[in-house]
Image (cartoon, rainbow over all chains, first blue to last red; front, side, top):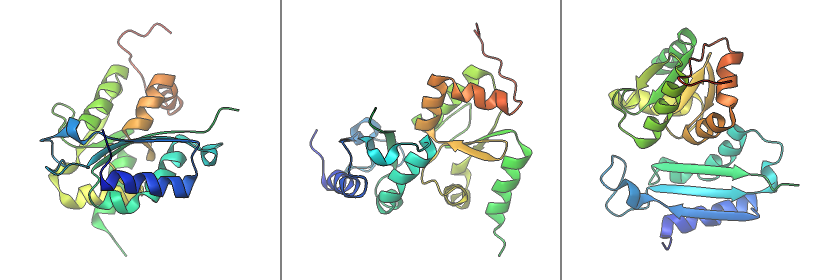
Length: 91
Length: 115
């Protein structure tokens, strides 16, 4: 599924801030249609798969915090749920 | 500056060994992510207190500020923030969650424990 404006912003912000080796942003809003927090216009629920050097040596909580910080604005507004899978490249 | 919600949350996580801030109740989760954490805790047979953040906007916003974590659910063990749904899932799968409870002196009564 093609990303909308919010999804593109998420992709751009994460690319710029964390310079990932791999990044996948998936809009899962359609799976949550009708659920509280979902909006008819979509782009409320996202899944992010990201691999970056910046995560090396960081705990899961620290990795998630790094992603949450980059997307703080989105999480305060439109984005209701963000599933994160953050890894460091295997050496 | 006193913040009654912050104090309330602080008291809840200090007086209960395991606290899950969630949407809905353990019996009736109102969100799939909260429901998933409930299932994992139930599987491990860990006693926990469920706090429904949908009962008050102050609580729902307050818990996000308390640990500077933007999403719900949030699991606390012995007053410490452990993680949200993704982190708990990963810890459940690799055994860390069980170790966290065991390390905190919390009894795990896994239904079909073979270890």
